[in-house]
Length: 626
Image (cartoon, rainbow, N blue to C red; front, side, top):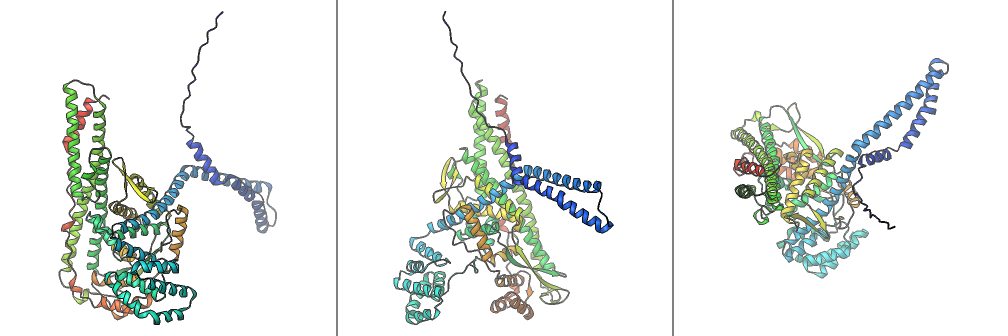
């Protein structure tokens, strides 16, 4: 008897276990620490409730409470505690994962911003001539708080090419660390003429570097408490670059300053600033406030619309419908719109031709037509979004023009003395208000989520010591144009929370010192960067002198306020403003204010989506099977 065997094939099905809900509940229970909470409930409901109830009842009524009353209060405490515990577990299971993701976004944003600050600093160096690059690198070294005497000598030699001067400055730095300033004066007497000769030559080509070198020679060194000076008008240039759709209006230093500002605020920096309020009739200030508010809205709308059309162009490059060379970084929105429209016309023509060939020859639809039709549908959605954004730009631009006309009409005539505003006591007048620019926890998480989403969308990643972006399927080095676009996105992320486009915010931030980030190094972990950022934010002194001076300048220049002697004395005594600066401001001519021209602010014309594009998509879908 012959036995036949039947082979049996075993199949294995692989899949992902769907236990996300269980994991959420498990994490919520662990975060709540149920055992400790139950122990607290037992302690509160047991001894605490019994002792408290018995003592209070006896004091009030002269006898112990009944068993029923004790049972009621113990049961009430237990049930209330359990209900609260269950509510906390449910809340954590629903919102806890979102909170964890928000905190992870904060850490990722801190990590990426720290690396990007260093990357942008290095990118700025790459574009310089070797001689200038060596000099700028030496200046950055001399600005480090923790630079050793050997580092001072090396930086001095790089800056001046003089080894003897490097040795002298190293000796001065060594004596400074020991507090032996009398020995520093001895070196000044011995080497003063030689130093002046070298610094005079350096001042001809690099006055800033010469000033920093002189500070080291005098025995001074940067301090954490002093922070790092900001460029007073970096925010104005960033917002102007957004407003005029020209990233080249930003310098590389502006890009770095924008990233540093975001890094500071995310790590808890509180930036003090001075504002003013006025009680009384103030038509001039009201008209200017309206114009500045309209200008702020225009800047934000312009940046949003520009980013929408650039996003469409980037997507067309990714799907090989537009050559990267046709839409390079830094291209103006006017040309970008033209080339995107041309690409959509060519895509529609290609879809029409392929649909016609398939219909005339009665052929089965191919995958090429389906892919092109899907690309056309996606492109139309993105174009519609960009079109609506540019429509909003046009509306806001019209408001800006009307506000500008009102301002110019009001300031074109001379105001009599009764309408001039003076700082001083009385019912009418200016009152200085101190405010702090900072991010609370919710705003910090929102900013970081915005930045992380943008960085992921741009496929920004670090490989070794360099940052790369992915476009048209290939990795490309991060360029200065890409860094400028990142600075624009940082400004857009911060705008809803601190109002960067408002002139008083720009004036206040520009008048403060930035946190010292010289200790930021490549290879630091996200936690190390977070600790460094928080520590440096606490170290910076709150110096209000420059803020007071800029406030006085704004009052005189824009609002035509006369600074009286009493007002100058108040700013000097209260905020430490420099008397000579206030004197120069008060003596400025108020009738020489330049008129504001908005002719260069006209937004690009973006036509509505063409009917041919939709017709081509409809014809393609008729050919394609459902």
